[in-house]
Image (tube, rainbow, N blue to C red):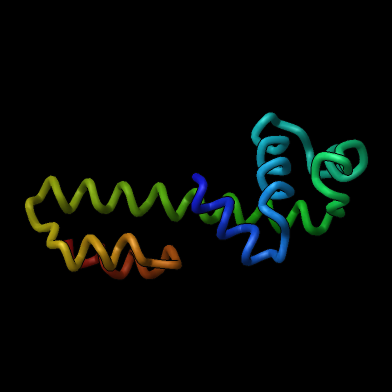
Length: 105
């Protein structure tokens, strides 16, 4: 999870504490409009667009990590997971890359 927060901060040009606070608020079930209006102190004055961008990217990255774990598990269960394949899956930046690596299995 920490890697996701670091990546979000880097990609969106935000500070890590902003990202961490905003993700915590989103995970608690707060809506984007609520966060942007009433939790400005926690997010470092992030506006609604920034929060929505963060939310969308966070969802994508969480799905990517879940898919990587699933693919690694399934291929390992088949006994076909090589160190090179494992590294390629772990280094994949997009869901399409993971799917392409998984397709032969």
